Length: 241
Image (cartoon, rainbow, N blue to C red):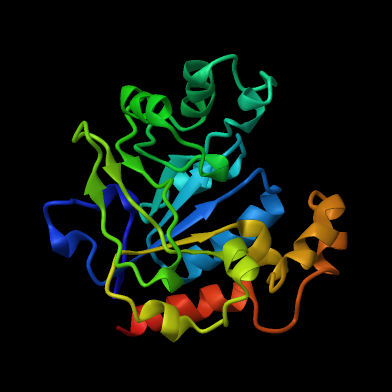
């Protein structure tokens, strides 16, 4: 089972996504140490992955030179909705803020999966043709597949697993069960949860004050089977196929 980038999905070619694994990562303003921890894993196993970027970091160059890594953007519209203009005073300005960080991006997932028809239209205007804002959990039993938005230029790429939502649903950490799925297999991880090996969101919430202090953050790492080991198991089983 091959690992693939979001940008290589073709809705008219079943082989471009069927029986492939799409690893995506929302970096969510994590520290360079935390992001590097995830990059070390991706590089070690030499697999394709898509990173949705939230901020400028020196690690962008490290990712750009790796042909296996696709860089998308992870725009945050929440401040704008709350009257906070830190990223811009309107949709266009927010989009410009993030496209300036990753000009080459063609894929997007909004922070908090924020979307509406105006935002989707703006994605196309800014050269973003793969939208990953639709989450439908694997436990729903619904078989997902990519599909064309009404304009036909934008491809909607739904996903069925996310690390923090896994904790909210309290699913079993059973990689085989989640991989045994015939729809498109898009996984969403966050570097902070990989670093902490999060098994319950209480661990993440209690560690918030130390997110920029690696030494203290290391003391919060879970030693059992959590997000980190789920990712490693997923990669190993994917490479076996």
